[in-house]
Length: 116
Image 1: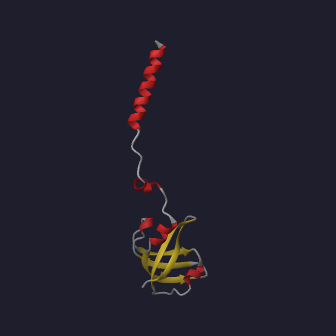
Image 2: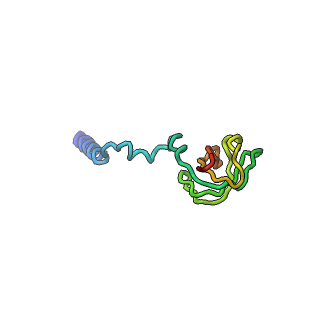
Image 3: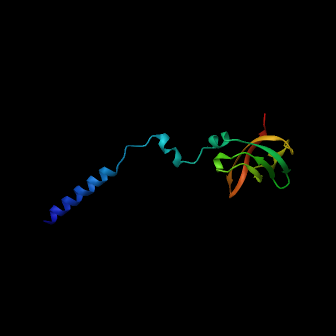
């Protein structure tokens, strides 16, 4: 009798396991589980206008449109920059294109260039 219970339990477990399996997901279906690559992040740019440059502090104030990769609406805010030398040639009133991401807990400009 015990042998019958073991066989029934194995059959039940095998049947449930087969029901739970799904077809392998394609790479496109799996993309939401992975962080964006550096090239994808670099491609995501936002337009903005320089309101203030503080090279000593490594900060720039930008009035910007929505930042998609950060799920952030347009606003004016102060950003840290990865490298203060990025601010060379950028001045108040300039229209720029920039990329930003969260680095070490702070929203940081990772690339910036004059808009064309």
